[in-house]
Structure formats: C-alpha cells, structure tokens
Length: 355
Image (tube, rainbow, N blue to C red; front, top):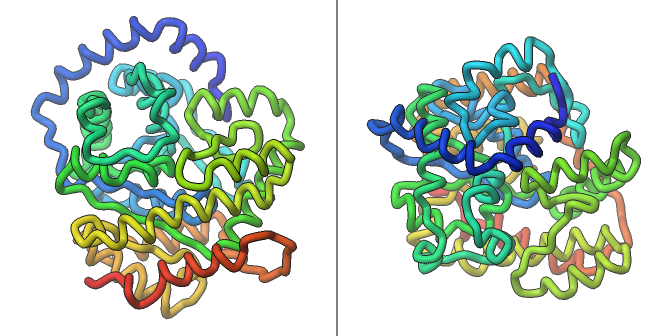
C-alpha cells in the first residue's frame, strides 16, 4: 500500500476540471441517497479523533471515507472500480503514529481535500471561524454531493467524518445539516501538546520529508511541522509569533487554548448547539470503569448498540496494541495553567453528557 499518493494527487489537480465533470456524472448514482444524522468528529490534533472515528466506522452504521478512496477522491465511485487492485492487501502504519495499523478499509481524514478542490474561495476562509451566515458564501452542495457518494459506496445509513478543521465550522455544519451530530474529543492539554510536539519532531526526521509535507498540505492537513497553519481566531497573532521564533511547544499550546476556548465559550454555552455535541474526554478511556461509562453514553447519544462500539474499540486496541500514555512530566510551557482552566471547565459537571 502506497503511503503517499503525491504524483497521483498532482495529476488529479492538473486535470481537476476533467475530474469535476466525472464527479457530476457520478451524481446520477446518488439521486436517491438521503443524508440523515451525519456525524462529525473533531478536536485538537492528538486528542483521540482518529481512534474514535476508526471504531465507529467499523460498526454497521457509518459510512466513512476510507484509505482506498485516495488518491482520486473527487471521483470515489469511478475510482472504486480500480482501488482494490491499486492497493492490494498490504497494511501500513501511519507515519505520525507508528502504533496504528491501517489498511485500505480504514477510515481516513481527507474531507478537507474536497473543500480545497471545490471551493474557489477556500484560501480566504479555510482557517477562519464560520457561522450560520457563511452558508450564503460557501455553497454546501459540493460537500453534500461527496457525502452522498461515500454513503452510496459504503452502503451504511449514516455518514461519519473526522476533520479537525471542523472545530471552526460547527455552526456552519449545524445550519447545513440540521440533524447533524458532533463528537468533540478533548484530552489533557499537557498530554495533547507533548504528543503534538513529538509528532513535530518525527516529521523533522522523517525520510522524504519535503514530499511528506507537500502531501500533507495538498490533502489539507495543517497540523504539524511545516504544514502547520495558524487558525485565525482570537489570539492567533501570538501563535504566529511563537511559530516564527521556532517555539513550537508553546505554539501548539497557544493554538490549543485558542480553539478549545471557542468550544467552551461558544458551542457549549449555546443549548441548541450543546445538545448536538457529545463531549468525549479521551483521558476517561484510560480508566476501565470510565471507559465503559463513556462508550455507553456515546452509544446512547448516537442511538446505536453499545455492543458494537465496545467490540470494535477492544478489537482496534488489541490489533494495534494501543496504550494510552498519560505520563505526567513537568515542562516549562507557558500558559499551561490557562489551558488546564479551559480543560477543567470543559470536562466539569456543567457540561456532562446527559443521555
């Protein structure tokens, strides 16, 4: 299995008009597809979003973008006729998580590439906070078309995606999909930022580094190393300053503070939005009793059997020998107290999942 389909993506981009026309023809197959209760997983990088998406995508309920939909994901129905041959039966490891085994049917996070490809004004809004009024400027039909194709291919009732950029688009998506559900993953900020910085250093040492960074940027992964993009919310100037000075540890923490503060002060304080968000504290999955309670609450929120979630959760942990490491080391990181204040407020009893 090829880890990086860089040449193929470049080919697709060079003939994007042609691929868009094929994409329009694919819409013929999805005329009768209805989008109901789409579920969007989001959170800061390294907060458990990939894990929970992979767990849910393996149940019988969720249609999710797969590894094998790359590289020609603008025409997923057409490409599905060739993808199995293209990928074969090999498994691979994620470059930024050597413990996570992937195969061609693993869920993948490339929804952002669809945004990049179809929205001409993408560069003007992709890292900005969107609200209900943004629907007037950003036509949701392209996203809906893609979602219908994924449902058509997977043949499961509900769409599921993981895209951390959606932390800026909850209000937009809630306006477009009025029956949408959101899973917000949050994790101890010290563990999160340390993990982000570890990945940052991994990218600095990786083979074919320039190609990997180019590939990440092309797909719309703006989270680590040179592909990192500052999210333009309150406090972004400080993030830019820290990045320019090479202080990435503090940079990642400041970005964490900025975006999770939005969740705390906006989404979770608006009852109409709050009731559609399941708050998943990743740290609770490290405790046997809290893990069962959390996954049970998740099953109630999604209205799917707990047995399937538990089965897939345990299988993925066993397969990948996953261990949630919460090693508590003291670091000289500025603003850590502010980060913990936000984190503690988010996971406090005021915002418990009421299911």
